[in-house]
Image (cartoon, rainbow, N blue to C red; front, side):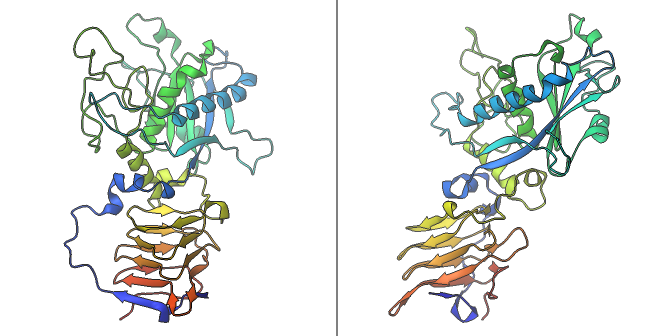
Length: 392
């Protein structure tokens, strides 16, 4: 076995096939085609509970940390059990595992920080959803109180304005709004609502921050989320007798289903270098986890970018084609056994996304039979101990 060098590279010409209108690297379904490229992602969040000077707009400070941790646990429980889609009727849309969870992220540079914060502000403690005083999209609360919003999703907890709650035409229900890497959740927090009832709206608003749109309008970029009338629940009368949804990005009594395309959109966003969605993930792809080794046993093409956490082994007779960006952690290797092949296509790139050196490509040889490395014109391999490039 030896570390591949430039002399081991076998050059392939670019494919003569016409390029697709949309590269598979930007197709959401590419990101759910291979479970081995879907390691669990952990999204960092923190909580900000807003209260007034007189204490009427939220629960007491000593209660909020435990409440926040219970809250995020039930939010994650929803993600653990992806529901089958109700729509369209009779659909065969698979309910794939949802490969992300939320973790409360304390600031480790601050002693005793819990990731749960409490602010007294008589102007910014409340929300008004409708009317002249509507302020739900006001970003002053974010500008003033957001902590590490370049790497953590900030969740702001605001009570509906007490005077508004008294109005018979105002709906002080659990609701929210996504504003980039920050989310506001509105409710009647002084009543300490059961966290179980908050899981749907929280996942919905955080879903917006992860790049998803409402589905009922039919313009969310996914073919597996049909247009519908956005019924809250099933009724005895049309259209809600048959056209009610359980999708997380609709407003309904369940809000617990994500389709393959929706999951793929989130993973695509998480894989985009420099995206908001990527910045809030714990970067577990920087350090080698040998328990996350991927073994290729057949012929397979990876279309869709991914950040691997372990080594890759290509067995004898197996072929791995890499068509998009693949990152390996520092020290990780791709081992190609005799008769195995690694083919990096013209749109493919293998590198280390953390700016470090990964271990490179190891070719195993038995007698005259060896693992083989093929690079198509345009392919990129970076951050290896030995330079590798597709040269004539």
